[in-house]
Amino acid sequence: MASGVLIGILITFLVIVLVLYLVQRLPLEGGIRQIIQLVVIVIGIISLLKYLAVF
Image 1 (cartoon, rainbow, N blue to C red):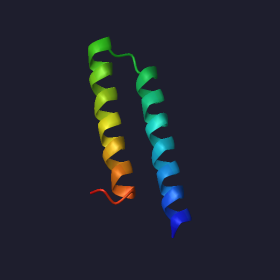
Image 2 (image 1 turned 30 degrees about the horizontal axis):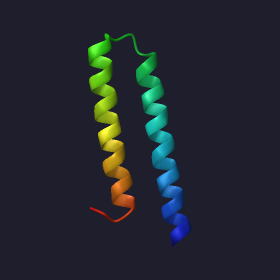
Image 3 (image 1 turned 135 degrees about the vertical axis):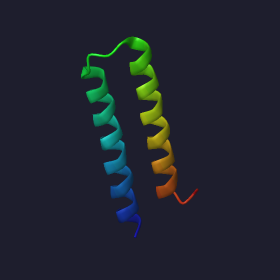
Image 4 (image 1 turned 180 degrees about the horizontal axis):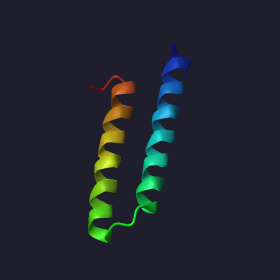
């Protein structure tokens, strides 16, 4: 059971990092890029908290 949670957390973390990397590669203005990065980070934190049974 614990290994499944650990794998889920690892996969979620890797997806967050990948999406943040891809956002950096997009030709967007700085303000829009920061807003998108903030949204991705908030969604990622919520997803990680769901794995830890906080929500």
